[in-house]
Length: 363
Ligand code: PHE
Image 1 (spheres, rainbow, N blue to C red):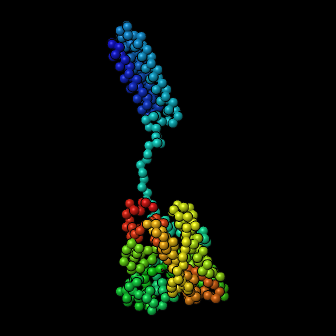
Image 2 (image 1 turned 90 degrees about the horizontal axis):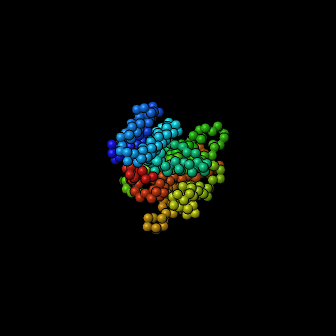
Image 3 (image 1 turned 60 degrees about the vertical axis):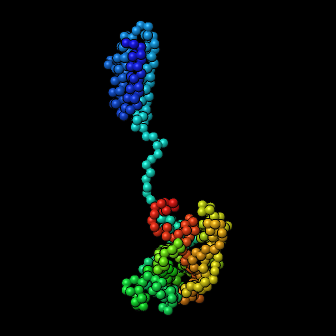
């Protein structure tokens, strides 16, 4: 046998032995590989060694040297595989490679409006306001009458509301029409009524400090800033000695916590400004529109209307059984979409309801 033949049979043996040890997936498989290559009687290394005798005499020293090297190599490979099997019970081929990127699992995420609502509940909760819910289908008492909106008021116009059941105009004039609520102020009435109902005769009903978040409905034509369904956050605080100063402080703290403080939304607490603009609502007196300072995409600063607010009208307190000589209160109703859009720089309200995952997955 020529030296070249001998050396190449040695090389291929070394390669096969290493591969066999590395890929042995159990202790039994490793032992079988050991017997195949290193077995004292019929092992392949042993057989190659026998071939050594047939190599030309002059080439023997070189062949022997290489043989010893390969034997060493194969034995080391076996020892390493054995070591590894002991360590993890695994061999190299099935070892778990933690550096390989996993398959991404798409589990979805909360809608930006839901995120905003949760954050609002969180902030107002820390200010001591309890979140309560009211029905989306309302009667005219809670949506209008108790809120000091008489039958003659244009806010009750069938064209401005989603009346249910009969033809809208007939429904509006019926004794107790039902409608999709046009504002969350309905919840003010429901909460105060419940408090009064739970108060023993002769005692004063308890102070109220609640927020309510939910959907409201108005037959608006959809455009960049309007949608026939949107969300409001309603706030109501009734107690002795409540003033406009309390209202302004709470709203300012709320906006500061929501937009400022952590800098995550790119604004600093000191940059938050709330402006009250005189306005009118039947259920508050005095009433204001609540504006926030606003910088548009072009860097121009101005004011953006966030909702309405005011001191609860004595007529409303009386309608539900609170004594306006004893307590005062403030109420506010803000657009959740407005606040969410300001936070994320969303310029079209319709994007929020198209359910396009390319849009939604950004938040
Ligand atoms: N309900 C009013 C609206 O929807 C907002 C508001 C709430 C105003 C509470 C004053 C007090 O426009």
